[in-house]
Length: 276
Image (cartoon, rainbow, N blue to C red; front, top):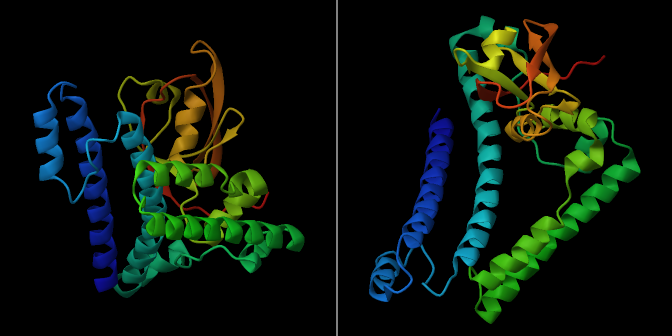
């Protein structure tokens, strides 16, 4: 329980820090370019959190994008571990619900053995791990070089870090949706998007989508993350209809929806991939 509270507190702190960074960008954008005194006061009062006024808006956006990416990675790990902590607590309170839910997820980092266990060929798994390790080391080299040359956490550092991040391995592209889905589940990560609620009068309500439905696919796009929904619904013509595959109480249901916002509120969940 203590571990769960510590992880939850850490996640909240990360979110607060992110909000402060975004607030700083909005605040600096409201300052007129000629008002140098006001800009100087803003920066001087927040020197512990923000960079100097020499940063352009582009530099700030670049820095924020990298920091947001790092926060997302940490939050994903925390989410998986907190989920594990919740289910462990449930074991002591309600053994029946724990048995029904199956084994509690345990977050595991990527390794060649883990990749092979979900169906990746040995040589491909080893190659992915090699390239991933090389990429991680390049980031360590960049940080060390930036510290020595005095540009750590400055625009040039974030520019170089962004270039490295753009070269990062996309595990989903490498493995394909089916194997990547198994990988997410095996490592204790969320791999499904569930309907939390349906907005009244929305296309989703008219099509019969219900709370607790799990969205498996939208057209030809497999849905594993929130970003998949956002990307899929914004493509194509608004007048076109698309098939949405739903998992409802263990049964597959197909509904037709017009492209565009579905009108649902979502939450992430973890479901064992079907073997068929």
